[in-house]
Image (cartoon, rainbow, N blue to C red; front, side, top):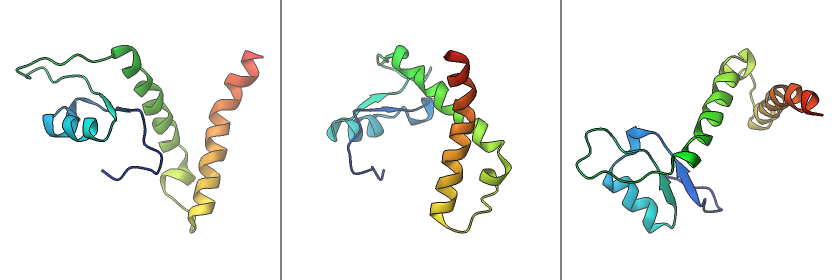
Length: 102
C-alpha cells in the first residue's frame, strides 16, 4: 500500500480487507485498522463501529462526485485542472448544508 507522507492514525476499510496479513501490515506501521470482521472469520475481532460509520460519509461523497459528468469522465488534461474541479464539486456539495446551518 502506498501511503501519503504523513502516516494516518487509522484506516477505515470494508470487509474485503479483513485479512490477518492486512491487519498485521497496518499494525506494524502504527496504523489502527478499523475493519469489520467477515461473518466466516473463526476468531472474531473487535471493531469500533462508531468510527466505522464515518466511512459512509466518504462513500456518499464519492457517489456524488461520480454524478458530476466532468469529473466522472475526466475531461481535464492536467492534474491541476482536475483537482480544481474536484474542489469546486466538493464546495458545491458542501455549500447548501453550510447555508442552511447558519
